[in-house]
Image 1 (tube, rainbow, N blue to C red):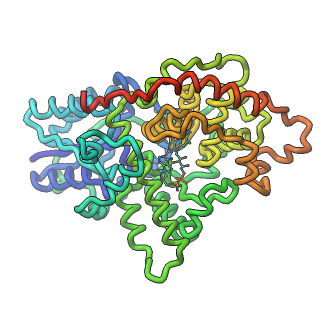
Image 2 (cartoon, rainbow, N blue to C red; image 1 turned 180 degrees about the horizontal axis):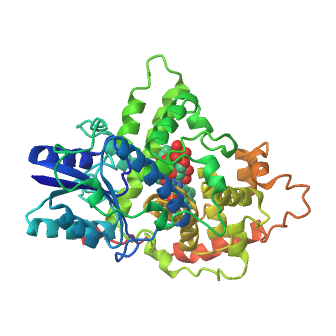
Image 3 (cartoon, rainbow, N blue to C red; image 1 turned 60 degrees about the vertical axis):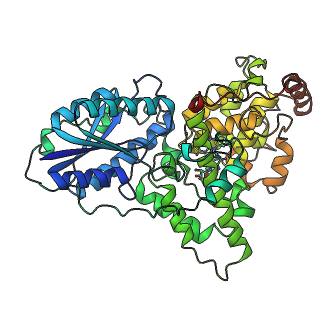
Length: 481
Ligand SMILES: Cc1cc2nc3c(=O)[nH]c(=O)nc-3n(C[C@H](O)[C@H](O)[C@H](O)COP(=O)(O)OP(=O)(O)OC[C@H]3O[C@@H](n4cnc5c(N)ncnc54)[C@H](O)[C@@H]3O)c2cc1C
């Protein structure tokens, strides 16, 4: 009899989960049981602790997943600690002969997986990892010269031109017992942590009301979101995605962050949208939406090859940049949405209240921090990491570097978004700003701008010009060194 463990990580779903299916097959083939494991690992070296908003999401996502697993008679075990230790313990407790997981792409996570694979093979256990969360594995997408892509357009073209079709998503299993339900270990015999005891939800104060009003974590909600997007927003997506008042985008990012839905499922569903006789807007919406999901693939490609993406400038010329002191009150004003620059403040308040900010406003708010306040992009990245429900190891770091001008395929350093012009263009009726700031134009408590936009822009350009005098220096990818 061979019991099987599937170790869930950023793949909190039952459908299109190759590791889960493999674990079920292993258990069935050997007459064993299936054990589904999640480890809250805040201690393994290099693994970045989760931010507050993401913890809120994780709690609800695990709660819903646990309920679904229970309905399918499955065994779901929660453990907290160093993943390697916890997994080894559970392997022993269950006498498992196989362990299965879907891949993650961060450096520390990959090292951990390699360590576990080494341990398993030395112990004579089957250990298998699967492609599940990216459509294009980063090591398979290379330029003609064999190097990783650092520019999005050729990267995405090369992905889409692949001869092999992107695989079809897998169905969710209909029971999670494994084959022999009478065999040990019985579900109750295995200790599992109490999710509430992990204290993932905020208390004192509980700031999560706005998150609960806006979001429904979990696999079922992810698919509802996708259906709603296709029915109501896809056709207007290309033209509407930049207008923050209208919620024209899919809002799938937190679901993708935790793998409650896979990109394979998204692409397959989009492929089934009828295109014969479809409007040009629909065709353009489809193309554009797929490309945005492609940006996620691209960001993960960068993270895979440059694992220190969240901490080191992709373009090392920026290592010489002199950032200003973040402790003079301006950073606090930015975080609190009291800079006196309405679009920035509305965005930062949307973030604080709902754990999300519209993409256009993210660009403007980030550009303001980096290029008007001259505050290091890593400080902004860390704030987003703590406050976004979709805080993502690849997308967040890559996007901040993009705005700063030091990233791969980045906006040039001299592109300083003017938040006033951006607001006029993308929030012409002030609906977005007023949603988060009320009647800010007549509100005597609404602050005056903490900085003169034109002067600070000029200063930023001067400071960035010192950097740009040197030639671009992309650090060699870790995967080739
Ligand atoms: C400073 C800054 C920080 C960001 N931090 C994050 C983050 O932590 N997590 C995150 O998922 N996105 C991040 N983004 C990218 C983008 O803003 C969000 O993915 C998007 O707003 C999510 O909303 P949506 O799901 O409705 O997007 P849609 O427009 O519906 O796009 C569909 C999906 O494509 C992906 N996507 C869209 N835009 C991008 C992009 N620019 N880069 C990478 N993937 C993208 C996301 O997975 C998204 O869910 C950041 C952007 C900026 C400018």
